[in-house]
Amino acid sequence: MGTGGPSGRDVLRGAVKGQRRDVALGSALGAGHQAGEALVPVLIGVVIDRAVARSDGGELLLWVAVLGVVYIGLSFSFRFGARAGERAAEVAGHRLRAELVGRVLHPSGGADDGRLPGALTNIATEDARRVGAVNMALLTGLSALTGLLVSAVLLLRISLPLGMTVLLGTPLLLWLGHLLSKPLERRSEAEQERAAHASGIASDLVAGLRVLKGIGAESAAVARYRRTSRDSLTATLRAARAEAGQNGMVLALTGAFIAVVALVGGRLAARGDISLGELVSAVGLALFLLGPLSEFSWVNSEFAQGRASAARIADVLAAPPGVSPGTGGLPRPVAGRIRLRGVSYGTLREVDLDASPGEVIGVVAIDPADATALLRCLGRQSDPLGGSVELDGVSLATLDPADVRTAILVAEHDAHLFEGSLIGNVSAAASDSAGIGPAMAASGADEVARTLPLGGDTKVTARGGSLSGGQRQRVALARALAADPAVLVVHDPATAVDAVTEATIAAGIRDVRRNRTTIMVTTSPALLAVTDRVVLVEGGRVADTAVHADLVRRHADYRAAVLS
Image 1 (cartoon, one colour):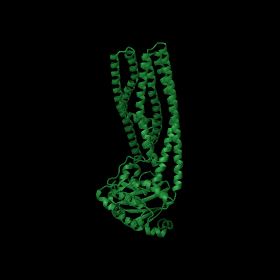
Image 2 (cartoon, one colour):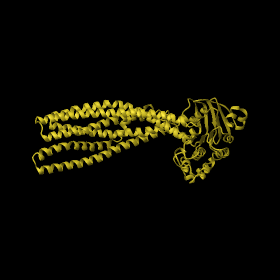
Image 3 (cartoon, one colour):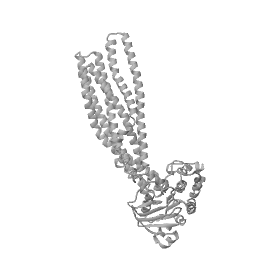
Image 4 (cartoon, one colour):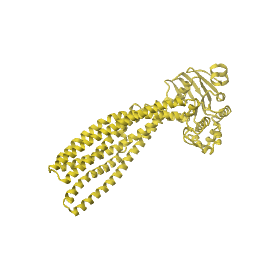
């Protein structure tokens, strides 16, 4: 992870190395299949020379039986070789997806910076599939190479000029195919970039569909996606043209090569240097060569796309962490004392803030950017550029981000629900099943459950799309309360509910978080009224600290923020 992360070449090498056994097995079976395919025209030539030309019925039956055995071997080797190759491709793709998801979800963060969720999804699906498919391409290439070598040996036995034609012509064709794959590699990378961007835009639009409809911005959103989709389509068509051009040129070169082989064989037969059966074998081998050479064209295409996708995967895996891992340990037990001293990050400037164990404090940020910066520092999504954030006297910068999040839970305003049941969402991070009921009651999520057909067992769609905004907020808040962390930071947890419900939630949070540290970053007067004190952040600095009623009297900006 970070600057020492893998390169695209490392990703490709790892995908193949991890499936070495399946690739080796598939290659061996594929080589056997190609060798058997090459033997077929030779055996047909033997039948012509030894049985048909001599009218020998016994020889005919013998060599037809040999052909039958060869075809049985071909069937067996193709079936099990293809299965090994597909398994290698799918398992490698699965491992890459798991590695990508692990990196994106790593507590240190950083992998998703500057990338839309839909773009990351595209990388973890389509790009991982393309890199995994390199295993199948490698297997196919090794098998095709075996077919070419066996054909060359057989042709050398028939005629030295024929064998040399194949041995000299094949490397030239492979080199030309590699050169022709370069434009495809570049355009494939552009295609995947555009497709990932379009996927990300579409994902964001779907997630914010209700908001877009509410503000009447559907037409602008559609126009934006149409432009993005058109760019993606253009990149896809360019990649398709490059692939078609490569395949067409390789096919033309391959056809010319086979024609040369057939011409040389025909001239040798006309001079009597080879027999009729050997001519049939030579022409059959020339036609057989079309298969391996065409497969090399496909292999080049797969490797070109695989290299482009591997580079994109490597960019995610090598993304520098948002915060350093930290080597210290959490204080035991965690009392929940929070202390900020001279914290500067984003729009924050030398912020000092204290929260004692069991205290409920409010934070009102006149500028929403100040609230966002504070939440990132408290959850150790980012470390402050200046100053320190401490938990029970221990700097968060010295702790592992995963450990920090077991003690400090930051429940952001736009927290998403997961697909599953309502009760499953609430209990996802519950420290104790006994706390689920009180958490649902405190947040009003129990009322949400009572209005649903199956109560708490009602299925919730991805991101909670089947619930209203207020219902989603109450369920998300219940999930945070049920986790029962030593320090809970909530950000505007009740903006989508009515005033009566908001007051009930405020009292519920105060009650269920008794003896636990709670920081509410909000402008809700109902929530601020139940806090022990409120910190006013204005212009990136702490402007005042007092109880809610006193701040209402003292500051016009505070009144405007919480009472408007």
